[in-house]
Image (cartoon, rainbow, N blue to C red; front, side, top):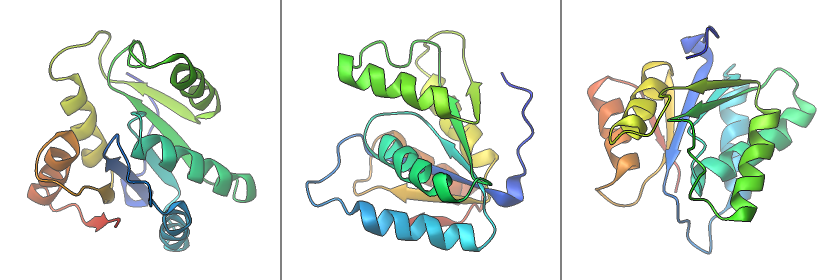
Length: 158
């Protein structure tokens, strides 16, 4: 695991589904990120999964082009996270890792709990969780539940 120090007071974590609806509004997501950045949040913990995580990374990367203070932290559940991604997804994953300000690997190998460990790490090190969750099961739902139990404010992106 990295020795990078995270300022929890200025950190936001993101969680959301891998499959996004066709009408997913990337511009609305950008506006939400700009709003939290205005409130002096500058560090973003991203779980590097497909779907919502990838879209968040890309939107934040665009914002970072104009605001160099933004930090993108890749929270990697295990080495080999992208092994089952298709070729295009693997290329994008490598590209994102190459531009991330920091990479935090939570497990050297896959375990049944490494994704859960990554999600808990992100919540434990953030002051806000931005969530795109529209069902009451799965990893993102469990992450939201964990944040609620730990009194971490949740912004539901709809």
